[in-house]
Length: 116
Figure 1 (cartoon, one colour):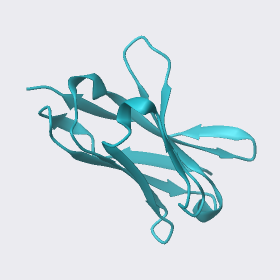
Figure 2: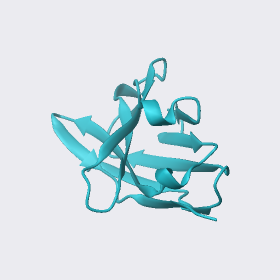
Figure 3: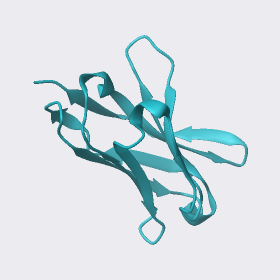
Figure 4: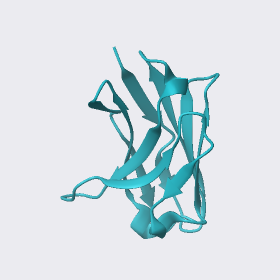
């Protein structure tokens, strides 16, 4: 079955960097677009970035443009989110997501806390 597992979250000071990973299994990873979302307490999940199946097309929400980079390694069935110049407002639970056979699949999430 489709499984997504995020890792790499943690506590970082403002201005610092983190790299999140999303390991995928149970489907042909290289054939599907992938996304990163984040969720603040009490809020809906919001789209952060997307990447096409072969990685040639990426999109970002305005608040992370120029600071975050989404990428993927199809040989490793893994997607990444490089987060630089982190701000306290980036504090959230980050999730990876794919749509497989018209159904949304999510990982369990990884917490990123930006705090001095």
